[in-house]
Length: 111
Length: 111
DNA sequence: CTGCAATATCGTTAATCGACGATAACCGAT
DNA sequence: ATCGGTTATCGTCGATTAACGATATTGCAG
Image (cartoon, rainbow over the protein chains, first blue to last red):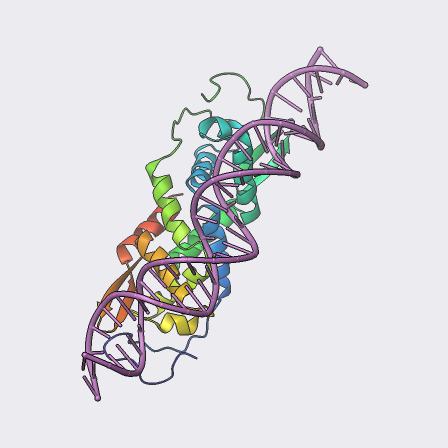
């Protein structure tokens, strides 16, 4: 692959032979960014960050979305690892997983 | 909105009245992260960054994807502003828009 | 155990994505 | 003017997303 010779006149100078079709970090970064690749989910994350701890169903009050829709977004965020939930009596406390957020920041910063 | 009184026993402590249902940065961050919320697009960005300048159609050689698919991903990346293209004779040179990348990093770092 | 409030899940629908092949448009060289 | 190589666009198809309402599920209070 990668056309070992010829074919570069003025463009494309470096010509390294990196064979990374799917580096592991690409998958991981895509997964994490995908979690916040939606305005509602960004808002949820920002909301969770603005409070020190969880916000439970208050998220529903803050967003112009149905409860079930918010629940789905929370599920996606949980699956990505960015958000965690903890049962607290009748409600559920959501909070940011700082470790995952840190990794997201790291991976983006390394770009 | 936001239940001005009562209803917080042990959970949810801060109780601020932030009315940000759709902060502008949420939209922007979602747009930028959405651009790299796919392994192939992350790979393309990493590829463009690994070379100093553009890679043109070499991206197709590096990725296990059809040319038309790569072209679509490039279109998405261009629309997000993260990538720019410049016609260079018969080919097209793609390169990272450092300004947009910087903003992405900034928005993520501010989370 | 019965009701109530908070969440999750299910089922549906419309819209979008991701991938591809085929084709068109573009540019330089012959 | 035509050819060859490069890239974009079109049309299609299956899979996934986003949103909702309706319905379970859960845990506490009475």
